[in-house]
Image (cartoon, rainbow, N blue to C red; front, side, top):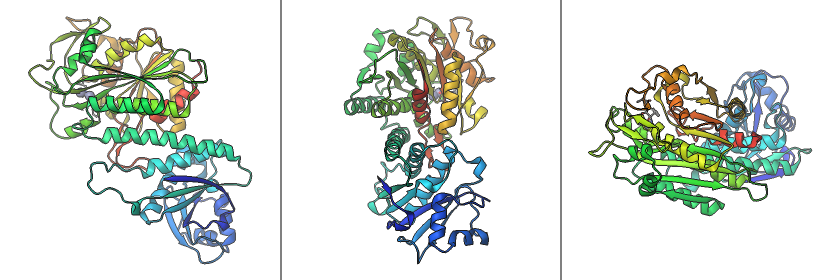
Amino acid sequence: MKIRIAKQPVDLIRDEIIAAGIFEGSKRLGTAAARINKHTAGMIKDILASGDFTGKLYQTMLLYVKKGLKTNRVLLVGLGKEDEFTPERLRGATASAANRVRDLGLKKFVCPLGFAHVRGLKPGGKARACVEGMLLGLYRFDEFKSKKATEQDRLGTCTILVDENDALNEVRAGVKEGRIIAEATCMVRSMVARPGNSATPTYLAGTARSIARREGLKCSVLDARSAKKMGMGAFLGVARGSDEPARFIVLEYVPVKTKAGKPIVVVGKAITFDSGGISLKPANNMEEMKTDMAGGAAVLGILQACARLKIPRRVVGIVPATENLPSGSALKPGDVITAMSGKTIEIISTDAEGRLILADALTYAHRFKPDAIIDMATLTGACIIALGNDVSGMMGTDERLISCLKAAGEATGDRVWQLPLYEQYGELIKSDIADIKNVGGRPAGTITAGYFLKEFVGEVPWVHIDIAGTAWTKTNKPCAPKGATGAGVRLIIEMLRRWQD
Ligand code: BES
Ligand code: ZN
Ligand code: ZN
């Protein structure tokens, strides 16, 4: 989709359709709606008075206008209650509007920045939110359909209409940022939705290499032999059961202009299919386990966005990638393996494989002498039970990093909620025969998984984000159609911009 920016009065716009937001139960119209109302002899006020359109959140209504405007379609978009409005709702409202316009088969859509007023958002931030909402909301995954979305059902151009006094350069920057962040998120969605026979560890490594080439990042990929030389016994323990070769991917972004200090390292679990291994999962819904690489995919998207946004700090991405399958050579319950850190791990369930590959990735992260480490993983079903599908779980060792991520989550709508890591949880993963075991039982399943990871982070400030519930949505949401969501991308980008070292 092309995005244009124009400074023009609403009544002179000739494009096919203009959107105007309406707050529920508010007497005062927003700037765009007020202007349209004025040029159409009070049409919007009349409709509101009739009660046919109330401004309920994400409700839309198409109006045909014969006189007063140069366009003949206006799309009213409900914004909900004015005092409950947030940037996330602005994204949702523009997403609903864009979807309605596409469903109408129209090609040119005008979204005025006067669409809605959001407390604390300047024109640049507003433009960014509108662009994010539209691109995230319009996303579809059709790579595996023989009939692709054609030109006919695609929105061609969106014009962001700025107000008289809005600073054009700020709006331009906002549009650019919004596009970069949304495109990275959508790239991640497509990787996550891609089936396991296509999105293999080799495929992820290839994708990382092409991102690196395109964006000027450093990229190195270890195969099983090099991983063995490094002593990655936990990562290789998981990889052993599969014929598909494992890959340990490292991407590095170094800012050009700013002095490159200590990096932030982001680690992402990439199990390209999790069958459970010898501790085989039940057959029902097992196909969903192709998404068990969502953390790793998010890391690749984050690195792409860092380069495009020219984030002023070093960022390293680490993605251990392998399948988890049962076979004659697979890891077995009861086995003991030695992780790269030297710690021995008793395997209770081969289905608790994510923490194993992350253990070695977290150990490897220390080579970069990081300022902080953040890992993202579809780690535990228990996290879905605890927090559902709209909020990711968060645990860590550094309060400043935790509050930075919490704030970034609230600002982006890619939300996180902290769970505790009290030392009592450590008791649950003590093993009788090895240093630790990989399962702590059913109680506090998300926390004991987090505690297991903590054993590999040492003194470096660290946070773990469990995206098991948030990486995939079974229902259509305004900014995320059914399927992969790209969780973690917007969260970490925002955190990287806020973090002060
Ligand atoms: N990949 C799963 C976690 C998961 C479950 C992600 C549902 C997304 C949706 C993970 O590897 C796993 O199987 N975890 C086990 C751990 C248990 C054996 C301690 C779980 O959550 O059941
Ligand atoms: Zn598993
Ligand atoms: Zn898994």
